[in-house]
Amino acid sequence: MPELPEVEVTKQGIEPYIQGQKVTDVKIYDGRLRWPVPKNLAKILIGQKVHQIKRRGKYLLFRMDDGHLIIHLGMTGVLRVMTSKDELKKHDRVEIAFGKKLLRLHDPRKFGAVLWSPDEDGEIEKHPLIAKLGVEPFSDEFSGDRAGHLLYEHAKGRQIAIKQWLLSGQAVVGVGNIYCSESLFMAGIHPEMPAGKLTLPRAKKLAESVKDTLSRAIKAGGSSLKDFVDSHGDPGHFMLQTKAYDRAGLPCVQCNTPIKQITQGQRSTYFCSKCQKK
DNA sequence: AGCTCAACCTGGCTGC
DNA sequence: TGCAGCCAGGTTGAGC
Image 1 (cartoon, rainbow, N blue to C red):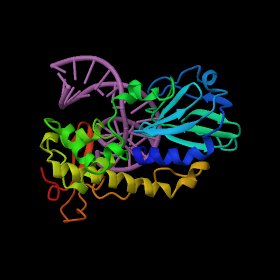
Image 2 (image 1 turned 60 degrees about the horizontal axis):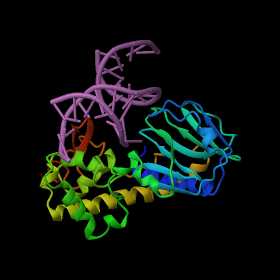
Image 3 (image 1 turned 120 degrees about the vertical axis):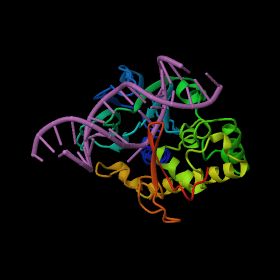
């Protein structure tokens, strides 16, 4: 279920158990993820301490002694703290042990990633996977008036549909397919509108909608943080109640017009043709 | 540079 | 029930 809110909640959930801990063991049950998990990951990580866990977009970055452990949850990844009493489940891919605490990556579709980046402190921003990401939605660069201006300037001149532009994460990161439909609905913007037609006032409204949608989802997820330390929690069940996403044919909550579903860039988009204008 | 699209992989649901 | 077909929360990399 990982869009930015789920990744952020995962980070907050595992941090208290992992930060400051030293890696004692690494097991790769199936390393065939998006990219192969480094075969020598155990050799690299054992003995290194986790100094800090950061989130950049949907990437989790574990600051270690000699570099960063990069983890991405892909479409179906779940990362949780467990103990050896918790049975290994089908699709558990990688396990990093910190004494009795086990950090397990469960990922049925194998679109996730576990990578090692040997780097000096602060260099991780230059990693090829990180460098081209848009700004963080909750950073200073995306606060106040700057947020609307940033979206406006980035969208200027672009022909691409605004849905696909926002989803690409080139301007602002973290807006996945669900919250993309939600944010555009909140902002009253038609998903097929060319990004370049975004006016400054609507850009400001969109920026606020993005931040509001994501922060409400994080808040909703935060209430289930306790689930992250046992094997029984069901991450994903805390997803924000949606106003547009996955509501094809159901009445718009604002005007009762049936919500439409279309495909853009191989992904489903949901919107209200009356409330959202081009 | 901007944009589109296939591809990676497994499981769950729908409809015949 | 069985099975084929379609869909799913992400992102890269090839090709125009």
